[in-house]
Every structure is written in structure tokens, then in C-alpha cells.
Length: 478
Ligand SMILES: [Zn+2]
Image (cartoon, rainbow, N blue to C red; front, top):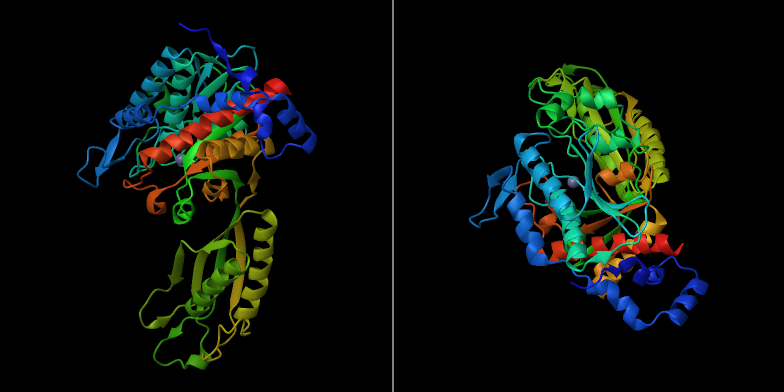
């Protein structure tokens, strides 16, 4: 048995290779550090076969729909706090304990597995979630946890010591599929969602179970408070599948995630006048549906102009009869962009142009070739405002430096903003945080056919481990 290797000491200067280092620090780095020291961090390699074998083994708890003939060609249906979620949790607790971690469960069933470091202090965490959508895949959330466990195994293989503790956290009910608030338990930890609100969430589909009753039933109602005050973290890194098409389309391997985009949800009411479809000439109509169609088209054009996205997911009209021109339409509008200011600018443009279109003004040729109609009215309600989340520059730098070191090719690494929410959003409110994305085949997620190649999973796991180690060594050297 060889002596433990103090990883942090070996890496403390290597971290300075990160992108945000002032010139003087870089000079100091090149003067003091020999090439051999930087190879130490790359000497720690995750085991791809072990990672994938373990990932697929754990997917036997909550296996979902079959979509192909291969042994792993099934999706996942592991709803939060179900019996199969309990099996996956039990495995997580047993495995991390056997790898030398202290395991704590909080009042929301969040599981924190912490591997001691050379010194006392807060742990740097890799975190994600083991629950899935009812018709989900094998990678969303699961990869992040399994990569964290693989990190612990790799550290143990090499008897490597970190300067401070490192850990893996499994957040409860991230999907919000069974209990309908997503990122629910990291939200409670962050103090943004009241504990009682989460406890009283009833399962969807008319069942009587609540989050609290299910936590109790499966034995994961922990005794420590679910709070960043009781379980503070030094940092939180999350490896996740992209769930979008960009990395694959650009043949890139790692996304360095800078934050999560801002969004606003609106409810738009369009009021015109019900009238007979046969006897009302086009020029005497106040057709709410026709105007709504133009407004939705215009929201798409404005989103294009601002490099944002705008979507309508719900639309209803009345009275709903083939031979009556609808006098009222209500639709939702979901507007998202990386910066709050962009979403605000789109909102201002939309409000101005929607009013003008309702009054009959021809904006960007939307009325070309059409018969002018009677004026209509448009009213708005803002249903939700979610500001942009910007991750921490130190964590982003650690991820970028790791991604470049692991891939050995900057062109394979891409800066990104996440389109979807993740537990890291709540974690980032109370500690430095960032995320790592790996490619999703065809950009597909929340689908049994969700797929990321074993090579890409291992690459992501390698970047995750290096990011955690770089952050740990940065703390040691600061
Ligand atoms: Zn996820």
C-alpha cells in the first residue's frame, strides 16, 4: 500500500492555469512549477467502463419504456420518493459510505456524502439528482450523481487526499414530476421554497401521498434541517447532459456553463367580437384568433431579432364554434434570454407592437395582403419572472481549465448558458457554482431515447473530477 498522495498540494499552482488569472500570477506559475507537476492532475483518470457499468446497473431500479433491442435500450421511470428511488438512494448511501464518506440526510431527503480532506472545512460538492421523469432517460441527473461516485472511487483507487473535504449530493425531486415543483429540495435548502410548501406537495395524478409522507415511508426524512445554514457548501459543480442540440451540431464535447437564462411568463388576452363567419365581411370583423396568430408570429420575430426564444404553449379561444368568429383568445408567452436586460427589452417591444397591431397598424408587413379589420384590445398579465442566474467566475474558470486540459483541444469546448433550470441554480445562491454539459444525441431529453455516448459520459466525469480538484487546490492556495 503506497502512501496517500496530497492532491491539493500538488495541484495548488496548477489551478492557476485557469482563464481568469492575472498576468503576474501566470508568470509566477511558469517560474515555479515544472511540467511534471501539471501531469499529476491528469494522472487521475476516471474509469469509463466502471462508470457506465455502474450507471446501467443502477438503472435497473425504475427501468422505463423499451425503445430498442439492446440491453440498455430502455428509458427510466424513477419518480421521486418511490420504491425504486429508495433503492437507488440506498445504493448511493451504501456505496459512498463504503468509499469512506460521512453521509447525512436532511429534512427534505437530500443526501450529502462527504469524503474527508487533509484539513477540516466545507466540502466542495459534485451534485445532481437520481429521480427521473415518468418517461425519462438514463442520463438526466443520473450521470451527474454517478460521475460524482466515480470521482470518489478514483480518489480512493489512488489513495489521493484532497486539501479540504469533497462530496457528492443527491437532491430530492429535482424533476418536479411526481411532486409538482421542480428543483424542489435544493430550493428548500436555499431558503427560496418554504419547507411546509414542499412537505404539503401532493403527488400528481390524484394520489394522496405528500412529499412528507413519502419521505417518511421510504425512511429518508432526515433529522438535520434542509438549509444552507445547516449544510453549507464550499462550492457546487454539476455534470449534466445538455438536453439540447448545440454541442452535437458543432461536434463539440464539453459545455462550460456560465449560467441559466432569464425568463418571463405572460398571459395575453385578446378581445374582439363574436360574429357569424358567413355573414360578416372581412372588413367588419374583430377576429381575436387572427390577431393572436399575428401576435405569436411577431413574438417569434422579436425573439429572433434579440437572439432569444419566445414560445406559446397554451392557447384557448371562445366561443369555439366552426361558424363563429372567436371574440376572445387567451394564450401564454414564455420569453427567455441569457440576460435580464434582453428579456426586458423584448417585453417592452412586445407590449408596444401588440398594442399597435391590435389598433390595426401594419408592423413588419404582418398585415400585407390582408383586409383591414375593426380594432381589438390586448391585455397582459405577468405570471412569472425568473432572473438570469450567473455562475461564479472561479468555478467557471475551474471548469474551463479542466475541459481544455481533458480534451486537449480548445475548439471542443464551448461556453454556454443553460436553457433549463437545475439544482445548481439554487446552490449558486449560497456558494460558488457552475455546470458542465456533455452532448445529448439529437438534443433529446425527457425521453426514453435520451443518449450520451460512454466516451462523452467519461469525458464529462473527468472534467467534473478535475473541476472539483482544481477548486479544492485553489482554496488551499488562497
Ligand atoms: Zn436534470
